[in-house]
Structures are given as C-alpha cells and as structure tokens.
Figure (cartoon, helix red, strand yellow):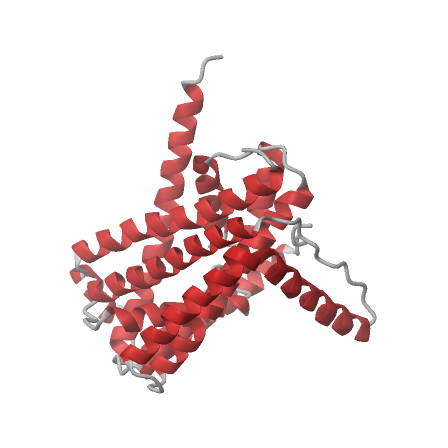
Amino acid sequence: MPPRRRSPFIYALQFLLGLALFAGLLYISGINLATLDLLQDLDMGSLLAAFALTILLTFFISFRWNLIVNTLAGSKVVSQSESYLYVLLGRTIGFILPKDFSDIAARTLLLSRRNNLSIHLSTNSLILDKLLDLIVSAVFLAPSILYVLGRATVPQSLALLAFSIVLAFVLLFFFGIYVFRFIFSTYNLVISFLLRLIGRKFQAIRPENIPSSTIGYGYVASVAKQFSIGLRALFLGRAVGINISALPFLFGASISQMSYVVAVTPDGLGVFDAAWYAVLLTLGISQDQIGVFLVTQRVFTILSISAMTLLMLAITFLLRTREPK
C-alpha cells in the first residue's frame, strides 16, 4: 500500500529541517545577498543544456516505469506521455512533501484512479522502479567513492565503473527475476526480524514476477538516467564557473543520489545538498563556488520541473479538448 498520510505538522517539521540544513550549508559557504549577485552572470548556454538534460533524464525515468507498469498489467494500460506526466507530478509534489509520500503515493494513486490499475500492481511497479534506481546507485557508488577520495586513478575508476555496469546488466537481463527475489527475501527477513524485536507486525513485500529482460531494459534506462544527471550537474557547474572535467560531476552525482535513501526532507532539501557540498569540497572546489552551485542547482531544479509539469498539463488538456466526443 502507499505510505500512510502523516499530519501536516510532521510535514512542516520535515520542511523546516531541510530548510535549516540548506541555510546552514550556505552560511558556512559564506553565501549572502551580495554573493548571490553572481547569479546574474550565469552562463545561459550551460543552463539550456542542463534543461535539455532534465527533459532527457525525466524521459528515461518515465520510460523505465512505463515498461514495468505495462509488463505487470499484461497490456498497455498507460501511455508514454501519461507516465511522463505522472513522474513530473510526483516530482513537483516532492518539493513540498517528502519523497516517500510525494513520488510513490502520487504515481500509485494516479495509476489506480486514472488508468484503473489495482493498488497492488501500482504499488509494486513503484517498488520495482525504485529498486532499479537503488541498484544503479550502488553500481556507481564504489568507483565514485574511490575516485572522490583519491584512492583510484581516472582509468581505474572508469574501468571499475564499466565492469560494474556490464556485470549488473548481465545479471539483471538474464537472471533479473532471481536477483529481485533474493533482494526482497533478504529485505523481508531483516525487516521482519527488526520489527519483531520491538513488537510490531510486518507485511512482507512480494512484487509480481516480471521477465528478466524487462528488468534488464529498465536497468539500461536507469544507467542512462544516471549519466544524464551527472552531465546536468556538469553544465550547472559550468554555469557558475566551476570548470572541471565531467568525471567529478558524474561520480559526485552518484554519491549525492544515494543521499535520497536517508533523506526525509522534501526533495532531499539540505541532505542532498550536503552530499554535493562534501563531494565538491573534497575535490578542492572553493566554498563560495560550492554555495553558488547549491543555490543554482536547487532553484534550477524547482523552476525546470515546475515549468515542464505545467507544459505537460497544458498539452494534456489541449489533446483532451480535441478528442471527438
């Protein structure tokens, strides 16, 4: 079932916590109103490239989820444009509410109410979708940490990353269903044990069977999405004058994405930014540049996703008005 709705007071506290964390990062970076005047000198070409990559990575997310949903349903119950819109709506709500509720619950409810898919299958589609994200983040994590900490050279990091990507693809494309069964059985075993220790009941998660080839294709879309996120971060860095190679941003994006696992604030506010702060500081970027990058990335994400959502809603409305009655 989708995550239970919490009281507005809890959501407000989570938002304020994220805002405090973000403000603290800007404070230690030395960012003030005078510093933010630098935002007027942002490179527009780099921002346009970042916007194009946002459109692209959203497509990879919606394509992966669309593939999973229609496979679970056994027929085409949701179109590519609908899944694209649902992903954008979940992301937009995520600027206000934590990701566990905004993304999973929003997409689940949209599927069940607008496309007549059962809550069970809708929820399982999101579980599998998020699991692929987690797997890809884990694949990128070791090479990323080794590179950022200076424990591996560029060739070594790239070789390890390429090997990890290919190995994971082979396992998922040919044996994906068995990999997923192992992951979920392990999860159920550990969580049930922990909950029994505190006297709480546990409902095991058993997603529907899905062909290994579908999991493999979804994994490829996830890898493409991860590279798109890294390239977007590169262009946002270029926009604020951080002129370093693409590799630090690719690996930095991988580490920052893992922060969403523990983020309880809306869109990872403060937590996601702290991960980027730590990565860029470790790579030798000055604190004032990091602060401007964090502000630019946060504002850019909100504006670009909101604009894309409004555009998709307008297109959907126009298409429906033109449908014959």
